[in-house]
Image (tube, rainbow, N blue to C red; front, side, top):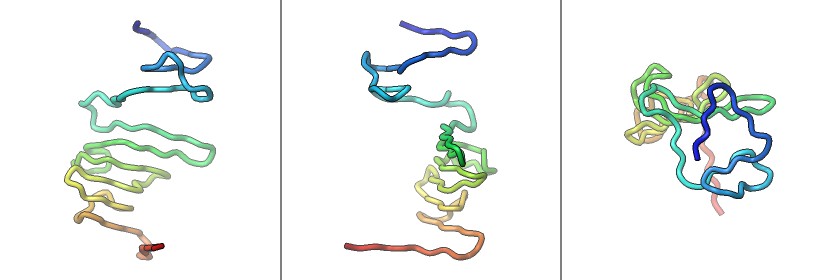
Length: 116
């Protein structure tokens, strides 16, 4: 069965995709794989909002001035974590030049390692 909405659609209860019994207490219950994006846009992301901030998780090919086909976490107007297609990871850095690149404008970068 297909549902087509020409404008806005509204569901009063839970929606299940791939299940006839959506989990109680959630609005959307998806069982199986999910594809997000059309494969042709420069940026695809999901927005998570609460009362104090908005996080985005997604992929882009040019959104931050680069063409690196990257996966990112974005919050408060800043890219917090970037993973490029070659495997380089940037924390506070959208163009990591190494496997792990850390950047903080205050030059106060620290790494804590806890054991046991």
